[in-house]
Structure formats: C-alpha cells, structure tokens
Length: 251
Image 1 (tube, rainbow, N blue to C red):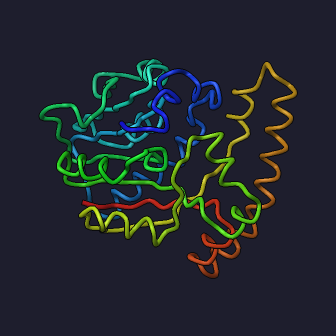
Image 2 (cartoon, rainbow, N blue to C red):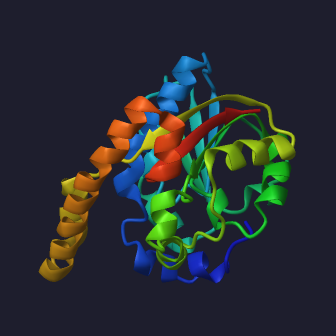
C-alpha cells in the first residue's frame, strides 16, 4: 500500500503517535458499516478490511454477521498486525500483506475505512482493488471545512495522523466516479467519543490524561453546534463545522 512515507506505518512511528491505533473508534465505525449493509440488503459471506489496523472494527463487524461469514483483515504495519492477531479466530483472519499483491484474492465486500487520505496515490489503489470485490464500503474523513481551514487544523491532521489528502463530500464522491465506481448509497458519520477508551490509554500518565479529558470536553461542547446545524442542513454542517466523515457504498 503506497503511503506517506510507508515507514510511518511500518517503522513504529504511527503506533507511537496513536497508541490505540484508533480502536476507540471501532464501535461506532462497525455500527455504521452494519447499518449500511442492512439498509441496502447486502449479506456478504466474505468480508475484507483493507488497512484493518488493530482489527477491532473488523472483529465487531464479524460479531454482527451470521456464522457463515468469514472476515479477512489486511495490514502493512507489523505493529498493527501484531495487535490484530490477538483478535483472530476461526472466522477472523489477518494478513501482513498488501491485498493488491495477493493473487486470486476476491471477496463479497471490501471495507476501506479511513485509509484513502493516507495514500500517496489513492487513484491507483482504488482502481487496483476494484476487481477484488463486488461491493465496497469506503469511509473518508471530510477534513476540509470552514472551521478547520480558519483554525489551521489541516497540518495537524497531517502531523498526527498522516493525512496527505483532504476531502469534501462532493470531491470524495466525484473522485470515486472518476475511477469507475458506481456510488450506490452514502451517509454522513460522526465519531462518538468515549471516556472509557481515553482512560484505558492514559491510565499511567495523569498529565496526558488531563490533556485528553480537556480535549474530549472541548470536542463535546464544540460538537453541538455542528450537530444542531446538521439537523437543519447536512451538507452545510459538513462544509462549515467539519468533524464529519462520509461512508460510501459503491461497486
């Protein structure tokens, strides 16, 4: 998987910056994925999560499927793969590999959750995985908004999370169409933060915990205007306030 640079993910730097590898986001991501499948009547027997990280989201998706479904997670980071392996079971498998180099690999559904913004060449990536499954569920952070630009937060996303591309809803959907995808459905998604995960991550570091708790409180307070505006005009809320992501079902 082309990255920026790849050593950020394979050399341990990303794990150092993100010790949980975003497992705190797994419950709400899995919920949205399962809702998207149910809404569109998709019942895959094989699911692949590309860039699966620590594997927690895929594990939760597996919990929501029937016993006839087998899940595979692909990851290029040895550190994330080690975390994911702890979650493996008879119907949940993980590979330290690039799916594009896997001969004959094909699935009913591929998940690409918060991955494209990390890739140097996401156009080639999307073209190459397209034949690997009938359906794709792709989540893309909508980093570009009036608020994030005015506050200069885009460079923070780059430094902390390795984001090298930034999207709006319209740009994301047009990009998928440009590489030959048929967009079937899409929804805005919102991260529900959890104090429990903050405490688990920082239980031995009171100073860092305090910073996290303050950040959590600020996000909670600042999130309400965005959600109120979202109830009035969804596209406007995403463009002005930010913090939203786009979950797309395509083939």
